[in-house]
Length: 162
Image 1 (cartoon, helix red, strand yellow):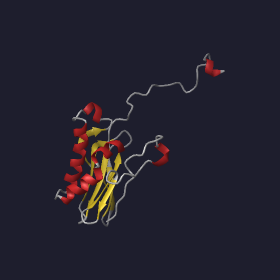
Image 2 (cartoon, one colour):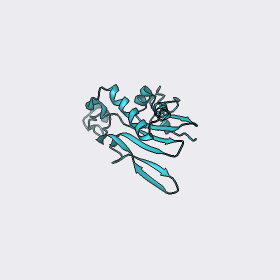
Image 3 (cartoon, helix red, strand yellow):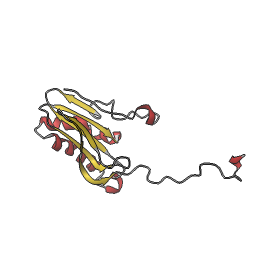
Image 4 (cartoon, helix red, strand yellow):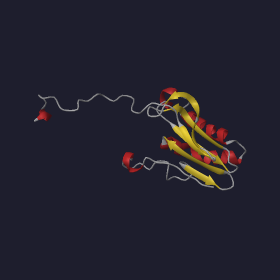
């Protein structure tokens, strides 16, 4: 039973940040008797719910991959008391495979500012992309929500122009 996760790596790493990928049970978890789950998205939120481990344990208790993944997403929403003004700045995608071959892709939002819709790659004899099942309609928002339009060059009369 394979397991996989993804990270933005050093290119987007903030100094001191670990993220969920290296934390067993958050970014990725596999149990050869049950299945596997991996994640991408808001790592800190995924750590709080031990997302991948939660999904695999849900499947162990009889949930389908879809039900197990949606439960993990609902836990993230619960941590924010379902406050959509805050949740819109968070996104999480889980890709889930059960030992018998059943699978699911779930996401907090349908898409993001960079991707109209979240998708997972599937290969069961035919390679294809399938949309995730989203907990919330719409797209997540980038954080911070406001980025001032700073001039590219200092004004000619600025002390910095000299």
